[in-house]
Image (cartoon, rainbow, N blue to C red; front, side, top):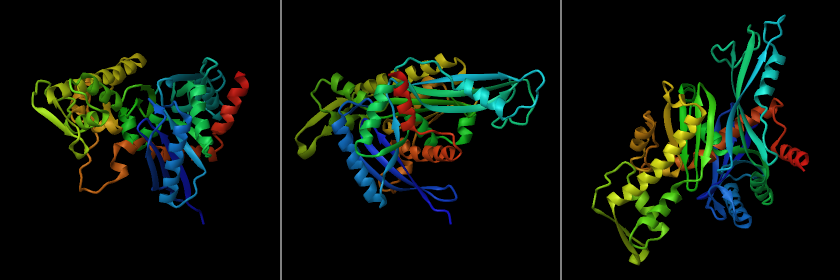
Length: 408
């Protein structure tokens, strides 16, 4: 009888370090059986700056996840992010010989090899490739071109690469815990597995994940990844803006309270009523005009969304005008009031914002946008595991070793 399989995702974020344990049943259904989470330390804007502190956070989350799931965890899928990570879409094209007109497996493989080829500097490492659909003679996309007739076969491949040493820092930090890394995954690729359905990817979707230290984005058209990237801006940046532009001296905890409880990204910037914060035991009090608070939040979030829009336009100026395209949000800051209105104003597209978490309605990790990346890693791992069974993956450790052998 077939047995269930355990897959584990690890997100080392700016705000939290989270390990999620998923059980994959023989019928391919997945269930989250354990989560370990601690506040992050030694992480800035999604990258490790203090390996010792980051490693301790991983150890703590690991122990909590093992206790919660009642399993031994030895291997993880690791999400990574950072401004140095870049996503590029390449096209591979193959013209069939004049005496051939039926597409076979060899033709497909040649087109794929061309699409996956990207000339990069010696300091960069490709760690994710997302193959898109094929098209024959510029016709409608298809996932299964073998056996069809045509003259020219094209396929797109979205290639994600980053600075090798920075990626290696994350990899080595996890391996010293010690845990083995099955694969490293660009965070928005994992998030999309949780947030977006196949139908939404086919229709066109821009997913924006606003975390504590970074804003990740990924854009789909016709089911294919067209653009992805990371901006070094997040909820912590908004907190810093509130601290900086408030006349009173306030701490980050007060700024977080004002942002999450009183702020509105599309609210009235002329509202002079005061938002009030009282610290623990009434030891610290602070006030700020709601209009000023809204203005600070809107300026930073608006600037961030405009930067995402400009990056997408640089890839394809018409991409965000695709009929059916919508904007989706995830991440802790996606719960910000007024974010949907601000996004509709900037993108002029339908916007889907996560529902607010209401006390008393029962808590679910699956409904919390702060856990979309960590849980999405399980779904990504499930897909990746299926590919490995078909012999399509040589493993992240071997790929890293091959890279460093060839570049030194």
